[in-house]
Length: 272
Image (tube, rainbow, N blue to C red; front, side):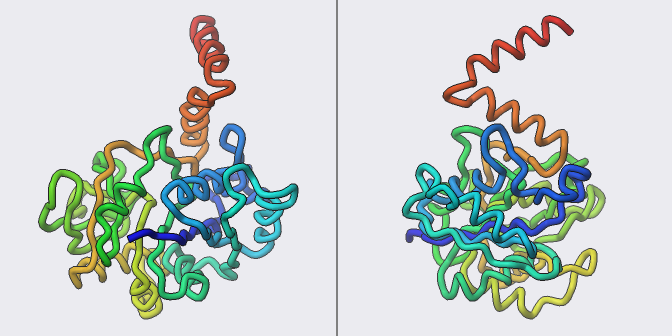
């Protein structure tokens, strides 16, 4: 089954990136030659999406429209419908996803966090789409203990091959002592429309916010969610060190500047 719509929640306040994000929205901070949000849009299009809904905070919708359309469509995005939807007040990632309900309607959809970018050749959406059979699919990665307090973690059930596992529940940022497994949620999802009904009825969770992890837990408990274990980590551009690392990885693979940049780094290391 093809999935033709994607949402990109990008209304976060970027507190980990201050002071850079005091004025510039986090999703519009450049990574090499384009903003983080553009990487997410392009990734969803590579997976088959032809409509992308950007969840933004007030005042950012105009900026994103200008970026994608002011001088004409960007290369490869001419036939893609890109629509900003405003999340008026930040009540968590689950609330951001719920904001797209009317635009998505009754269609299954990709959900991509703009903080995370796959390394070159590392797209996970196609593998997730292969596992999708009318139930939600979440992307997972095995985490080291120090990361278990920074990510949602699933309760695994039956395995179906090496990369697909039944999700029986999930916990938001449990920490190493309370984590039910080492399988963490890493910012790529395929949801059926039932997620909206679940989110609409969720009480506030960790931090007083509507947590997407809690909705995933509810679907898992109902037998309506699978996990796809990625073979490599996504690049995290939501913090300064991660942005530096991602810029290096993506810069080295750039078709125009990669070779020159590699030579520059080699000279720089020799001089240190």
